[in-house]
Image (cartoon, rainbow, N blue to C red):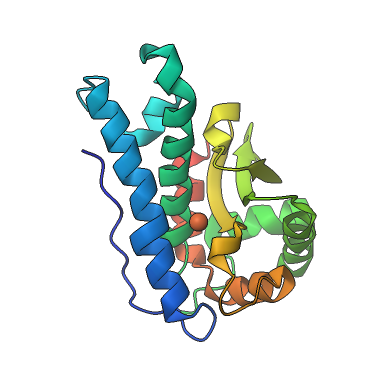
Length: 200
Ligand SMILES: [Fe+2]
């Protein structure tokens, strides 16, 4: 069975309120993982691949289940990345190789942040804003619903969940305030790990 990642923090206050974190992690994220496992068991899957590897192997399953499988697989992977790359530890400025590449490609961290913010505000409906590697180049993209960038061959480094369940309570669905707060709790140490893992 696939499992949720454990959080190495209990709270992200004051940037994300505890109730939202609790609901998001224990209910929403939970539902994606549970539904994914349920569908996989139904399909007699033997859990030999990582969730990431499974994205490219979705055609091994019954046609009628593929859409639902991909939705819940994306929902599991996207939430895993979202929760993993946040922390209250104030590692909120890029470091190392990722910092170097952000400066090179966007000009500065401030300019990168502006571009990320713009992209997240542009997103219509429910989805995610991602920092990805596309052919070894950094790119900021939006995906809809629970689409994972892995489906398009992009490697996800960092993500902002822009579904309303992520910012409905504290931010009263004010996306701008939520984005600003999120920048304070991004953990670039973890983003740097992801970058180094994917960079060729
Ligand atoms: Fe979410």
